[in-house]
Amino acid sequence: MNKALTQIDGGAGARRHFRYFDYVMAAFVAILLLSNLIGAAKLATLGGFTFGAGIMFFPISYVLGDVLTEVYGYANARRCVWAGFAALLFMAFMSWVVVALPPAQGWDGQAAYESVFGSTWRIVAASLLAFWAGEFVNSFVLAKMKIASGGASLWKRTIGSTFFGQAVDSLIFYPIAFLGIWSTEQVLTVMVTNWGLKVLWEALLTPVTYAVVGWLKAREGVEVFDEGTDFSPFAKVDAV
Image (cartoon, rainbow, N blue to C red):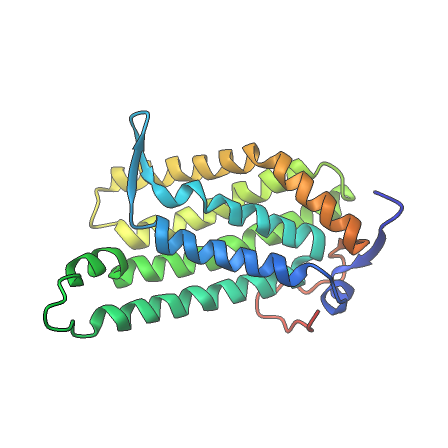
């Protein structure tokens, strides 16, 4: 560990004022919303491979999720997960209200609007539950691996946490959203394929994670270990 950094536990980290925490949280929530709002509704094909367009940008939220836990600790990452969950919930509610409003006479965009923003309740529920559970598992695994490793081998923690976090995400999302609509074989194929792609994305973005983590730690001046942290998703967190 860099001796210039002050080692603190996760509980203290949750009560400490950080210079850049709010910016990282804002970026995390913004990318989460935009990936779901803009990318989720479009299927794209490149090189003969068809995929949801959101997967090109959504993995950035994995990097930021790892950065939040690694730099600021599990307790602060927990605040961001709840902020993201609340933002997704409001986005779903707003989409439902706006789509349900009667279109004005002469306005012919209702069908296009419904195709983009009119997700079924199953997909909305699956997305919310999958994000919530997957992000908490990701943060929990990364924090525990950091304690066990003494802060060594960041790449093992980021890839390992994504491996488990996105496994939980996929295991929740695809069956809830599509089982009974797609065949069981299709659900399993897409679930495993997208899980593998997300883990691969995390591995490819490892240099970016290292750069962002190193930059933030140097400026915040701390090394957070979650040895005194309550890992319950529902634990009260003091403000930073």
